[in-house]
Image 1 (cartoon, rainbow, N blue to C red):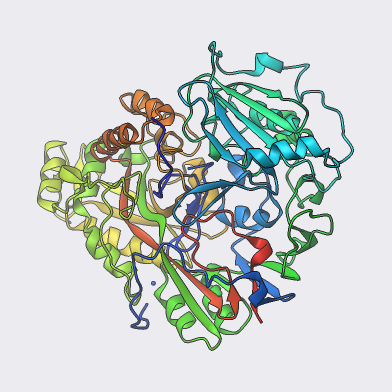
Image 2 (cartoon, helix red, strand yellow; image 1 turned 135 degrees about the horizontal axis):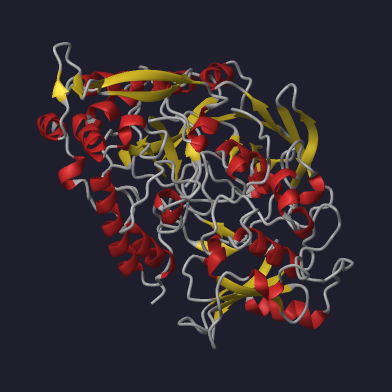
Length: 616
């Protein structure tokens, strides 16, 4: 039986390096690592959101929001592997299309700026509804004026049509019907219709492998996307029940911009094109040389008008953001796990820190793929896990930040999730003696210089650190020292804040640390991180016994059963040695104290950009 959504760290693919992240589609995103001594005010690890909530009438019209990013995207297609950085999704979010809104607890509602109602039928869920069906009926009855209609010919109908389906429909398929807001339109003036939904499905369902996609989950279970009573009704038919349908079609894109692989893969390279978006803000200035994007209110926006006059995204090096905030050059920044940044923000006049227990977690990823060197050997990965004192690493990373450092013992959900289970067991404990025994049994003999050897080869592995990101540099030193105690020699490889994500995607590393950022979908995207051949499986693992469990997890509609499946998957990952979770990363946001409705959002997504503003 389908249960209500709960807050847990779904692994959407976004990666973060200390304070930021990389995003996976619908599940986690990724960010680089952070360090030093700070203030003493205790933070509450049970807080799920901290944004200084204020009603709109308490806020003033006008003002600017200055927001740092590590880089601008080369490719702004968020569904392309090159578009998965959290900074990129932050930048386009004020311009983008979202059918659903999530609150801080992961509970979802329809965003009526874009979709008037959503109804489920068929399968095992006939009659379930969400949104405002009455409003949709009234809209149709009163003949609300709709924008001029472009062609309703299905995108890809000549080449694909139903032949673009990755699966076959049953007699009474599980169906989700979206009634769209007819006032919604792309900035080009074209209406947003079922054709855009169909084009998204055709691009992301995995049938045409020329489309380079980050994730196909959910789209690969759709058998048809059709027009309903008119072009503003979308009928999505699934080949089997799908519990996380709300995660699909966020960041919807115009059909013409993703209609063929060439446009999809390369058409989004370069400057942002306002015509391809449909949100409350548009790009006013795009300066790639200076690394600045200025956004201004969209004059054609049909919803509530934004309060802010401008949002300025500026490229700032991670090691300079704390000082830039202290100098009054920024109004917002994600501190991450940076004690120096925490101390600076805490002592900045007119600034404050808004903290919450975000659905995000730090980890070491071990590369068992072709570029993994000796890390390809399971015995070495297991020895690495047992040789690392994760409690000490967490305490060191968080030194100066009043937040508890506790090892995270789950690869799928974070500790404040109702679904959390400690599965560390045999492979998650700190036991260097057992690690040494494993290496002995694998033939790695301790040498006179304290480094193990086998068949004349030294046991040397490479740890890739992101230079200028204090937490990454700190973890590299601890990793090297702790593994040295069991005879593993660690060579530290320097990556830059500009190239680390490229090296990650290419698999040019042996061990690397970053953060996964969670989403409101507890069990979605797990295949994205751990499935064989997934572009976001940065462990480059192939674990045959996982595949049927991952497939069942993605489609099972019973929450308790999904939790059991997730625990089975987690236990296999612990033994295999794919990713070593470190700790649940606090969401620490430094903000201008006069700003309201912004800060540590937890599961709340997207941010309500129209109501972010300054207190009167």
